[in-house]
Structure formats: structure tokens, C-alpha cells
Length: 535
Image 1 (cartoon, rainbow, N blue to C red):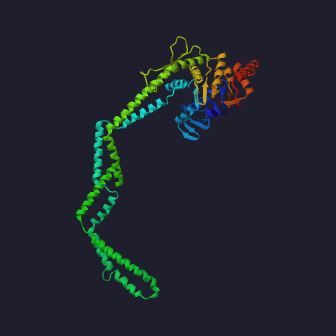
Image 2: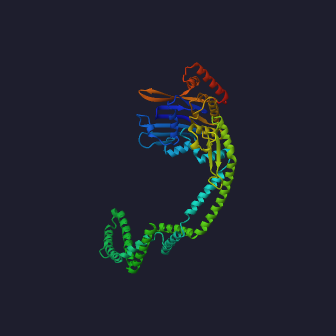
Image 3: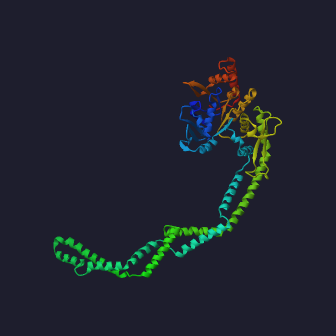
């Protein structure tokens, strides 16, 4: 339900914060006081397109915020409309899109007024209403439809025309063969690079070994000088530790000299081997350019390509399998659609009669409702299309709701439908539902709204005292002129204040004694008829 609504700088409303109770809530006040601004505020929270011209004159932006409670869940919806630029939407304090706000609000709030009857025009809404009334389970139909879409997508994505598949297969087979023929080994290029570097300057490496050996091991070289130094320190106790280190150094120097000699002797110029290395590295470089930066990436590419080759080679078999599954699902879907369509056709008249019966009580005694369900041969969409038709005058053929019914009539049709059905969002808003009615019909409208509010919160913008009297709560919307500017306020009314406001609604004068007596009677009658509510 809607717990609280805050509006700032929207139209004639400078700032208003309105708490709402459960049950039936009546919004009343003089014409032009700003009641429609509250409805517009809720429309903004429902994702409706923002109109910057509705920002209060002299303000930079309008802000609308509401707290909804649905079971244990709380939702804070917020909309900011600047004078210039794009509007912003927020959900529970986080920035969101208007579409996201609309999706959440759709489960919390239902708007019905002079300009907010789109839901009644929706073919989906017509189907859902009929299914709910008749208790038709469409779970299997929806599942089969989803399965058909998935299978169709797989078929469409399984490969293009035959020529395209042949071209792709030929290319992929060449790529796999090229990689396989190379017989790559992970880390191979690094090993080859090291060997190429050695053979590329073999003579220089051998010469360097000879030169180093001469410096280290020949007469007068480093080894001889090191031995001479050790002889000079021999039997000199102060140098005992240094001498031990020099012994180790001479052993290490000897090892290095031998290792240099061994390596130098192992290197032999081999132009043929060098050419083979260079050719191999060029091949690896070409494969890396085509298929991946490393040998591992190239091999992974080959594995993935093999899988695609297998898919293309088995394309016909896979396509036949998919087509077989699609045909089976299509047959099952059509069978289920026929079943659902038959149930809809069998219940359409009953729902139409039930709506008509409610409309009789809502000053639409001449209304005739027809619910048309398409034959299976015409459409299988979701188990046959459903359309609500209505005529509001005798002798006129029923037509689409959008073309036949006025805004007030549409609200009453929705009220009648809501009374017939069992499910609706936690909060429903009716704007000007009482247009063109009065007397006992107005009393009946109030009674039916109160009946509807037993299972949900209902907000109604009304000018009729008979309707307002049936409300559990009443909010007075009033306008005043402050410093040359119009300002609207919204105030919840207690019982004495409700008597005054309903007196005004009855006679135009809140001070009329007879009007107050009538107002008391209306309130007492409504209280007596409403079911007791927990305090």
C-alpha cells in the first residue's frame, strides 16, 4: 500500500507530505485545488513521461517521492523533474531508469483516470483478466512458447546457407591442418631463439672462449698471479682467514676456466642448422601472427576450431534434430493453445455478463459488454487473442473501449472489472470515477469502492459527498494565494472536519446546518455498512 507521498514544486503544490491509511481514501477539495497534481505525482512515479512545464514557477525542479509497503518489503520511489534537462528516477535511494521505476510501480500501483486507462486497452490485460476470472492456468502455454523461441533461435544460429557453411568449413579445416602440421611445442620458440643466438655468432663465441682462457690460465695469467699471492701469505697467521678464501677462489677460478674451455669446444659453426632454426622460427612467427601470441594460445585456437569443424560437419544432423524438436514443441504448443482458447471462449460470456451487472449499479444501465475471443484459425498467439468491446448506448454496436467509452466510463468499467476479479496491485487509484453521476448511483459507487477496498488500498479523487462518506480516510486538498502565488495543501481530516468538508460538497456551504445533518447521516450510513476494521 501507499504509506506516504511527498510532493515538492509540482504545479500549484509548493510542498506537501501526505500520510495514507489503508482501505478507501478519498481526496476531496474545490475544483482547481490541485487534486490532479497528486494523481500526476503518482503517474510520474509510475514511469510516465515527465513534463518540465509542470515544475512550479520560480523553482528549478519538481520532486516526487513515495513510500510503498508490500508485505515485508518496502519500496521508496523518487522522481526529479528539472526545468531543463532529463528527469532522474531513484529506487530505494539508488539511481534507476524510468523504465525500472515503471516496472516496480506496476506491481504496486494501478492508475485509472481520465488520461490513464492504457491498461484497459491492452490485449494482454484483456487476456489476463479473462484468465483470472475463469481460473485458466497458462503456465504450460507460456513454457512451450518460450521453448519454441529458444529452438527457433538455435535453428537460426546453427549456420547460414550451405555455401557459407562450406566456405567456413574449408577455411577452418585449412587452419587446423596448418597448426597440426607445425607440431608446436609450448616454449619451443624461446629454446630455438637461444640456439639461434649461439649459432648466429659461433666463431665469435669460440674466439671469446679462447681469449678468456688465455687471460685466466696461461703463463703469467690470473691463475699464476693468484697462486703467487697465496704463496706470499702462506704461514702468516694474520692472513689465515683470507688465505682460506683465496683457496676457494682459486678452485672456483679453475672451474670457470674449465667450463669456458668446455663450452667453447662444444660450439661449432653449422650454417645448415642455423638456416633450419631461422626457418622454423619464421613459421612460428607466422602462426603467432594468425592465431595467437604464444604457442599455448595457438594450440587453444586449434582446439576451438576443431569443435567448430565438428559442428559444421554434423550440421545437417544437428539441424534435423533441432527441427524435429521444434516441430514437436510446435504441435504441443498448438494443442495447448487450442485448450486455452476453448476455455477462454467458454468463459468470455460469463465475464461479460458479470461486468454488465456491476455496470448497472454504476449508472451505466444501457452498457452492453462483449468479450471477443479469436478463433484458433485466426490466431494462436498465447492461446487466442482476447478483446473487450462495449457499447454505452442502446442500438449501438459494441466497439473497442478506447473508441467508445469516456474517461469516467472507463474508470467505472475498471471498477466493475476489479470487483469481478480477485487480484490487483496493493494500491488502486481512481480519478474522476464519479463523472456524470449522482443520487443513489453515487451512493452505490461509494459502496462498491468500499467493497473493493476490503482487499486492497483504494484512492479515489471525488467531488461527490456520497462517495467521500464511504472512505475510511479523507484528505482535503485546498488552494490559497500566498504572496501572489497559488499554493496547495493536503490535510488528513478527522471526523468533525469530514463533516464540515462533506457539508461543503453537499451544499457549497460548510456552515449549512441542514448540510451538516445530511453529512452526518451519510457518514453514519457508510460506517454502518462498512465492515469493521481493526484499529
